[in-house]
Image 1 (cartoon, rainbow, N blue to C red):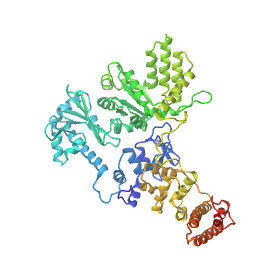
Image 2 (spheres, rainbow, N blue to C red; image 1 turned 180 degrees about the horizontal axis):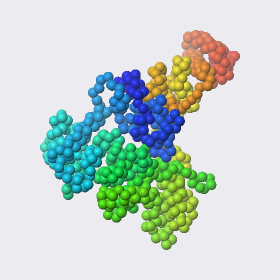
Image 3 (cartoon, rainbow, N blue to C red; image 1 turned 120 degrees about the vertical axis):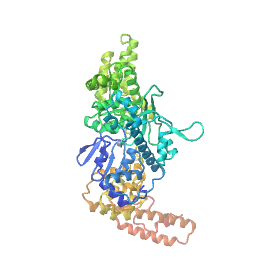
Image 4 (spheres, rainbow, N blue to C red; image 1 turned 30 degrees about the vertical axis):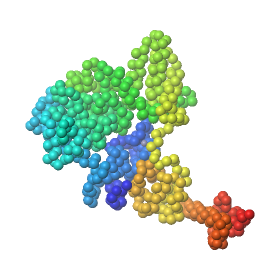
Length: 637
Ligand SMILES: [Zn+2]
């Protein structure tokens, strides 16, 4: 894990990084006493259980068990390798790394790809603003795009021709294979060699949360097909996990506590140009739970903007997408109070804004201005109520058959509503129109929801707000073992007194055993520094959870000596057990070492008697107190 970086160096970086500031780039954190809390970026949740402890420089999620230090946070968040995370944080903290080691293997490859993408972006940007870019610039002007906005979004121009980028990159000694891997060139169909993927297109760089370009979207200026040509998936770019302009929008999202989601690049640009800087584009028609989770880190309210023509269909499809995996987790938050009422559990965050007939955001903004767009955003309604109203409108409620179908459809929709508050309102609304009892409708919906869950993930106790189990450290440890490790981690004195007497095999829980090993490897370093020695997220999460417990040790001395005694007794018992067994075997085989063993057993038992507790609780199969050394002999026939 430490991968060649010295522990003091890592400690130096760790101590200089402001955890709240670092995590705050991705998570909306609020102060809670000494800690900061927010919605966990690693699992979907409604109430914040993600905690940052700035003084210790660690984070921990009480929901999914994720935890660690600044390095592990970045590794998880941006899927970086450890050396990458170290380099990034070192840079951030102004710590110089001794020698920039040659990037190698997987992490080096990613970094090389990022550098290549940065270089390509430069090339395309220069092409747009340079002499050859007038055609693209005229196009932007015709679309009403402000040059300042075009620059803010880093737009570029891929010149017409087969190898402009290739030639430029060759001049920078970039290998063609690397360009192909970045999705920027394609192998020629005939013969060998490559050619540029983007030719004669306006380019929209797609950046990750850190503002690094990972892909391009290319728009044709004329009638060429396809109208949009995008980068393929690459090691840097996974579709469905990125949102266009998130890096530019996240600040405004947090400020306004709202995210606006449009479909196209130009829609997004125009929204920003008109002051809706909390806008992102979903990159394609899909809107994945991963994207939803990204947005929820920055804002509570998410408004999806739809054109009028297919709004109903799109909303229904999007709801379907959103209520896949994610909703299964969320709908677990549902439960009926004993009174039959609804238990409050947050609300479903996505709203739908429908644009006037014939408009997309771009055309609406240009034709009618910011106010028209704003009023549509303000009129946005919950995607659920929207879809439900559509379902009701499509059935003939005058006929009993139509009412029955509508009833079933509504129950199905309601079964996916995670927020009880919202479910209540929706159930009432639908029940009124259907002429049925709201509670009945709701209970039916809940049964449907449970059936779906049981189907999706095997049998599980219904109604329990179970959280996804990310905890990789196995089943939870026993309280006693937890207490011991917390003491060892928290109190240096306890460490020096107890570590020599405890063996790894005394600890049953594999994660805690690893902590003990790590602690033994570096007994003098601060407990937080152990993070770098742990291999798995599960172990780091466990460490973080122990470090976050603000424990007091009132009778420290007494506790330490009690524990010392406990582990000493344990050692003796084990030794007695071994010697007893050896005696039995020696008796069976006539081993001449029998008398020595019996002497040793006698000594062990006398010593053990000095430790009072042993006589109170002898190990099973051991001779009763008061019948020392001769006892094993009596077992022979
Ligand atoms: Zn979590």
